[in-house]
Image (cartoon, helix red, strand yellow):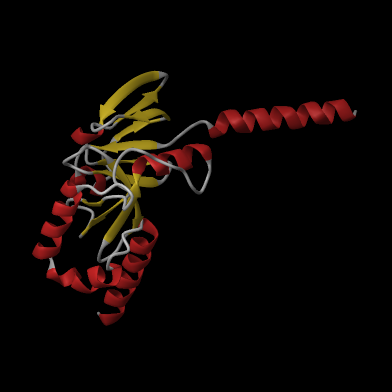
Length: 196
């Protein structure tokens, strides 16, 4: 009798593992497609890779399709929204939405979702991004351990064009760790909402 119970538990565990391998992926070519929930649906994230031009390989009905991220606005993966940074084709996962949107490195977050962890290392792409809203361009922050003059230039240009965020950037100051930036964006969004 006990052997039957063990077999039943093993079968339930295996069926859950097989069932949990199914993903929910929706690829959006444009922001309007995202707003209108019009996207190409896939049932499995096969892989994600690239140096500068990030690609994802997805499958539907066991047929694989490789997509250059630079050619899409973004995608949803198991309920997590990822946006493409136009200049590099890298992706960031939306972490905070509000008067300022905040994203973190897409590769790291894809790894966390895939492996069900809460922290992953990455060596590709910027460590975080900001945007004024979901339809505007992503502004990168380079990893403080690996300075990037191009990211610094983009950020400086964004700050100059958007003085309404001066308080946020004063709060961030010189601590460009993603943890500090995330915390300051959350406080900034709360303060702006309370002031309305």
